[in-house]
Image 1 (tube, rainbow, N blue to C red):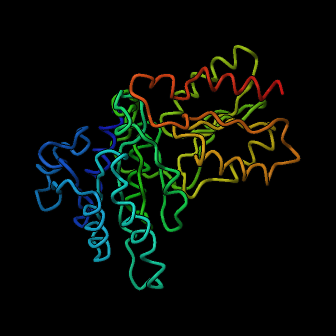
Image 2: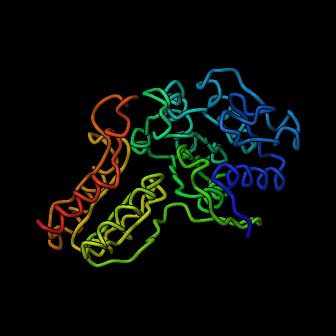
Image 3: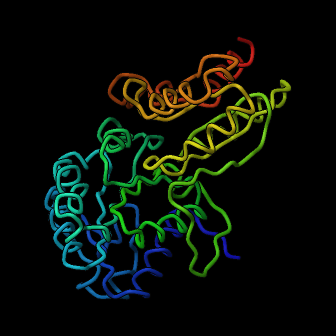
Length: 325
């Protein structure tokens, strides 16, 4: 089985999808000959032509409006927003058009074939316009699916599932893992389920939950915790919308504790939704308050990026506080 980094796995998934179905189109800013700012679409225009992999103007609202129109007419567009920080000009198209197309027509027409790819999160010294984690904004929107992979294997399988899903999907790619995450990835076609969390490691003392690049941080945290004799159950949520309540509930009923981590700011972050749901369903089983380890309620800083990010030491302190409560 070949080894790939996350960019290569994403490129491989797009290649497979485009080879299988000539209705699959890739477009966005600089995705053509240049291969995208991170090279995720390298060689796709060369292989499939300018009609199926092409550059767009620098207008995010136009990219998604165009994608909605293509999807409504039966195409399978994979639209790239170059950085998730720049998805906000397209917010109206995504929230008021993409998400509601099927509902408003009684399923006479829909844009279910649409996938929106975008790199998100910090860790590359990108400052406040290239480091944000906006997943919670879209989690408030019925009609969308939101997926976040943690490694190359997950990225390929989940992206192929997203492209073939009957609902529109926003696919957030943790950019700091693009080249840092390397692993074995099958060359053949495969899909991973959307809406199902994965229990990566079983444990008995505390459930530690995250998604995307935070899973690598959690892995380092668990090593510290185990040296202190703390048994951690680790869950990768994978899908923010829909999110897998039952898997998390089952784990917390066993451990009695939950620590959630994400890069986005604390207030209004998706950890709050998870915490509220688990409190409702597991209240009598909780041994301590649910802990959230997140980014700060400030704009994303450039020089203080390391202080902003929820690193393994911050998560470790939350785990110890939860266990010792």
